[in-house]
Each structure stands twice: as structure tokens, then as C-alpha cells.
Figure (cartoon, rainbow over the protein chains, first blue to last red):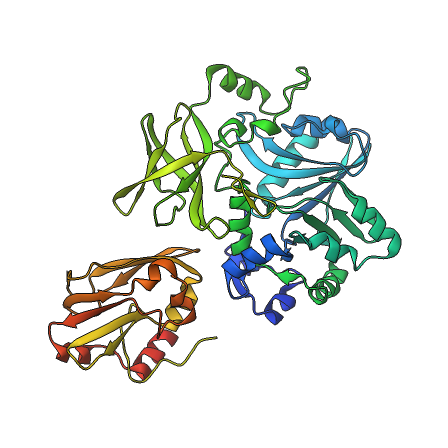
Length: 366
Length: 129
């Protein structure tokens, strides 16, 4: 997994983070900014205006070859055949044979013989081992794009600020990108995707250019945002964090990812399919739900959830700066419908079960 | 970022500050160093007024966006007042750790106990260890 025992790695933006007062911490073997002063202020900056994240530690994988589509149809629970227009992206789990989630990822369809996949930094070694073990029977090549960095620019005014930095022709293409589409614009791969519940772009570009582009974004009024706010933003958006909300022992059916499983066509035999079909038939024993604490206090990962059908556990919890209450994702017995209790320091506090997302495009949805 | 630790205060190893009010009571808060480590404070579980505390007893919790952190009684005594403002504005601990972000006051069993705590210089070096 991560090389935590070794010297932490640094992205090409390391110096930029220090310039902006970033508090650097170890994340999956990378020295990354947890915040630049106030996590709550950074959170609000993204919800109300525009902020940017260095996500260069994430792993960009380019798959090329005649059988790349067939390979990805085997590798992923979601079906890349759904991608009919060049640049279209898809979110999917990559499952093991038991139906457990090895990683969650985004795949971009760039051409019939070229797909780009972005996976998590923390799972890099394990993902690559698995992918390589699955590739043998297919005619394709895999290139790890360590020459590329990635910036996520997110918030209601994010797209406008990015577009202002592009040439007239590129600006036109970027402005016209639909949600979950990407396009190669010169050296920049610009995609209308993200992990915050806000509109924005994720931009993949050469390592040599990323510091300069970051500087231009700062000049355009985009503020740097740390991993701390990234976590509260994605939690409000009801988006899973790999290793926290799901892992190799959890199926997508128990991780709120049922919508990412493409059951049709039935003859597509993706990894984990048989196990998932069995689970679907027998019924999953647990489900991932959203929780809201009406009382004062803060829900945290691993706190016990008490329901009338047995115990569950909070997988991610925090204070929601947008809602002003604490929220969480929790895995609880499937039968649970009513409200339940969370045990905090020996006290049982009532929590409301909700369907995530909690917040989208700046609006509270619960 | 970090402010000077005021010279007129006493300090604990668990990063509380203690102000002698001169009337047999002291006011307690957490230091600027502590609030910086915690990050944005979102909720404070205050001790109850009139509760009797022993030195180093767990007497409350400060929850930041990042984590929950226990708060300890600096010395033995009885809680006389708590900062109700923190209910609505827990961020006062971040913005004014040594002032409006005070947490509670207590009547010490013996004011002489104050001598057991660190002064600003000792606390400063303690933080650098």
C-alpha cells in the first residue's frame, strides 16, 4: 500500500503549499496540506465561491489497445459500454471475485482504444497488482502517468475562473463541457468532475506546468483548500471515502454504490458479479445510510450505532459547516427504518436517518 | 500564528491556562497553542456549575472539526461559572483563546496550589520539547 515507512513523497506543488501557509501532514505516504489555516473557512470558500485542491498524489492510468474496452468491462462493476461520446466519464467500483471493493475510480472514454482511469493514492500498489493480474488475457498496455499532476478546482465560480485562463478556443470547449465530460485542451486535460458536490473542473496537466497554473489560479481568485475541507465537503456531498466507508470486505450493495453496478447486459461477466447476484438474491445484511445529529456533539468514525435491529457503526462522521450540525455515513442493519441512537462518551444520542447527499450545489438537502 | 503566552497566567501540561482572579477563584481556558493544534472548534461540552473537581480530572470535551479532545481541571476546586457564550460561538476558543474563549471559572480548594503549575516560560519550553 503506501510507503509510510519511507520518506514521504512530495507533489510538484509542495513549495506552493508552503508559500500559502499549508500545514503539511502525511497522507498515504505523501506530504499534503491538511489546511492553510482554517478548515471551516476553506470549506465555505468552496461552497460559496471557488477553491482548489492539489490531488497530484492520485494515480492516473492510461489504458490503450484493441481490447481495452473488453478488459474494462471485465474489471469494473459499472459498464464502460455506457460511454458512447468521447470524453464521457463514469464512476465505478473495481471489485474482487468476492464482490468486495478493491477501489473506487473514475474512467474516461477518450477513444475506442484509449481509456483513462484515475484511482486513489492510498490504494496504488494494491490496485496495480490486481490490474496487472487481470490484464494477461487482453491485448492492451497500461501506462502509469507519473509525469502528470492534478488540480481540482471546485465551487460555484470555479469554472468561470478556470475558463478565464484559457485561450479563446479552449475556453469555448471548456465552457461547453457537460457534467461528467472531459476534453484534452493542449497540455491540459479538463474534466467537469469533482469530489465536493459543487460544480467545477478536475485538471490533469504535466508536472512541469502545474506550479505555474496553480499560481495563475491563485491570481484569478481561487483559494487553496486542504485535505481537511476536502473530507467535510465530500461527506456533505454523500460521497464515499475509500478505506473508510468501504473496502475489500464490503460489497458495493453495502456501500451505497448499488447505482454503480451495471447488471445489464446479463452476459457481461464482470469481476464479482456472481457474488453480487447471490447477495442481491439473499438480501444484504447491512446498508450505508446518512445520519444527522440534532443534539450538540460530533459524530465520528467507529462510533456505535444502536438500532432496533442490532448494532451498526459510523464509517465517516464530522461536523457539517454548511448545515451547522454533525452528520455521518453509517453502516447499519438493512431492516432499519426508524431513527436510531449513537453512543458518544457513554451517552446515547438520537440521530435521524437520511438519504445522502446532505448538501449539493450549496443547498442543504436534508 | 502563535501568540505569546501571557506572563500573568499559569499553565498545565494538558495545555490549559489559569488566571488568578484575586478573589479565591481562577478562570480556565485552553492555550493558543492548544487551539491551533485542534483546529476549528465546533462544540464544547462544559463542566457543570457547582461540580467538585479534583486536579487533572476530566471535566469536559472540546470537539473540533478534526477530533474530540478532553479537557482537564487544572487543580482541585468547585466550578463557579461556565462560559455560556461558547454554546453559540465555540469558535471564540480559536479567535480569542486567552480572552473571550475562556471556558470556566472555579473556586480553588487552596490558592497555594497555583504554585504547582507552570509559568509562561516553563510552558513555552514544555511546548518545545
